[in-house]
Length: 235
Image (cartoon, rainbow, N blue to C red):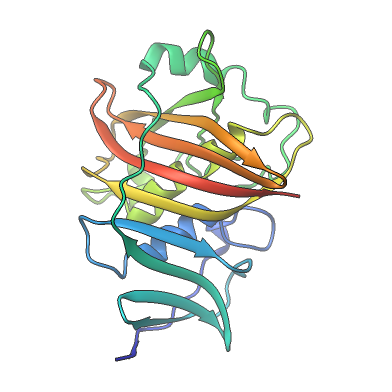
C-alpha cells in the first residue's frame, strides 16, 4: 500500500554543490522514514533542488522522494552490513586534516559537510590522507551543538552527511569532481552534540567512472558509531 507523507523542502543551508542538496544529507532524510536499527541503501537518481517542495512516498518497504512526478531519491532496507575502514586515532586524524586537498581547490566550497563554513553553520569535515595508511583519509568532527539545534542528539541527516563527503575525498585529487550515486549506512549508536568524533574513509576500487569507498564515524576511543559503503560518479 502506498502511503503519502508530508511534503518538505531542503533549506539552502544544506547544500552540497551550489543549488542542490548535499547527497548524504538528503540520503539521510530519505532513510529517516524507514525503521531504525537496520542497514539502509539510498540511491540518488537525480540532483535534489533546494527550497523546492518534495513529496515522500512509502510503498512496499521503500521510500521515494519525488519532485513533481520525477523520482529523485530512493531508500530501502538491505540485509548486508557495510564493513568500516579501520579506526584512526583522533591525533592522527587531526594531522591528516591539515593535508585536506580541498583547502586550496574545493569544487563545492559552500558544501554543508566539507566546505569552509563557519563553526555551527557547517559540519567542517576536512579529511586528508593518513600517513602510512594507503588509500585512507580521516578528519576530526566536532559535533557542534548548533548543528543539532541544541537538542540531545545529532539528526540522522547529519550523520549520513558525515559518511558522504569523506568517501568522495578518499578518491579525489585537486581539481577532481564527483557526485554521490549511492550510500549504504548502518548506524549503531547516536552522535552526541558537543563531542569530537573521528571520520575515516577508504578507497575500495573503481569501475570506469564509478568510484567505490567505505566510510565510518568513530568515537574518539575507537567505538564504531556508523559505517557506510558509497558509490560516486566521477564528473
